[in-house]
Length: 206
Image (cartoon, rainbow, N blue to C red; front, side, top):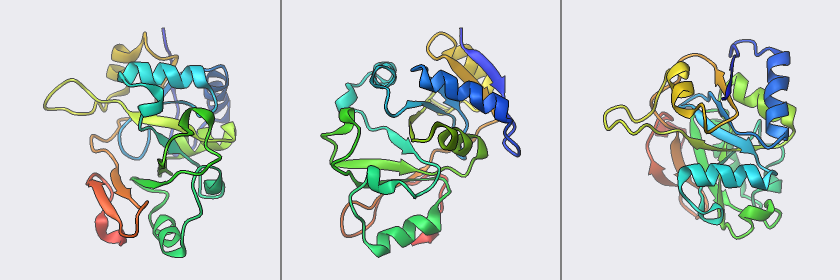
């Protein structure tokens, strides 16, 4: 049974955030709100937790394309190779926001991601997600929780999410209704930006 806690985005309660951190530190999986759809996440440094997420998604961990949720761009060099000033300006302009940026992976990536040539970086404009990552002190890996429904691609109601994921995760955060549009994915790993998926984020940032 997953724990179900309500956290308000305008002013995330420190006590409730601590509960989330404890679950992550113990290798637990959480479902949490972002500025787009709800995400499934875990501590980037916990291999067993990463393997659980990969298993749920039906992929091998070394083949999985998870996003790294960061609180800002200050520790980017831990996960991403040195980027040029044009790329950095795009990131500064767009983040926090509903974008996932594909960037060249650094040699210092955590062990399960060592073979990755690129990584997806997210800094969502959502106080709950940002506060969790700040308090944890490192990124959480994340993947969107999709719905089997052909019409509704993403479940937006936290109570329905709890019903479906109760036995698979350790904690579900009710941060209010989520969006049903995923992030815009932009590949910045080559010379020219490439739009991989057009989602919630406007393309006018270029």
